[in-house]
Length: 87
Image (cartoon, rainbow, N blue to C red; front, side, top):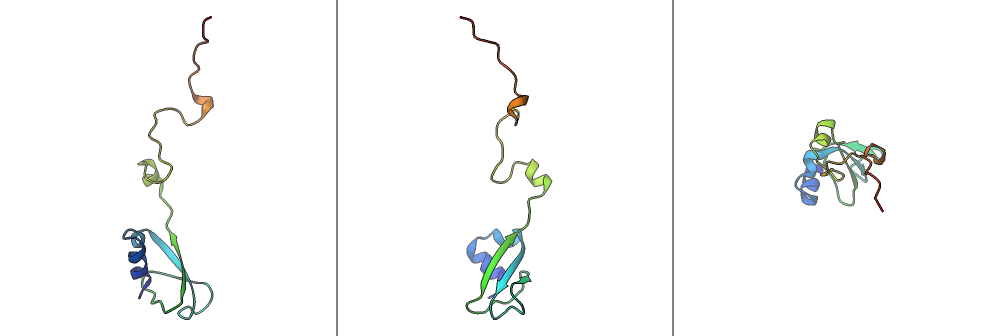
């Protein structure tokens, strides 16, 4: 099994987002070893998957965990002040 097969078993989009993986175990030359998708894994290897960072263009499109759907300003100080209530 390779790192690509492992990523596909976890989630189908994980392999395309992979930056690298760290491997501890008998298939690694040193601990941890930084590997790519083609690295062959052996039994009882420990793998840490590191995803690539989201680029500025993808973040501007609103992809990701913290996308904003509001048209309001992000900071409270930039918001428009409402007139005082009349009593």
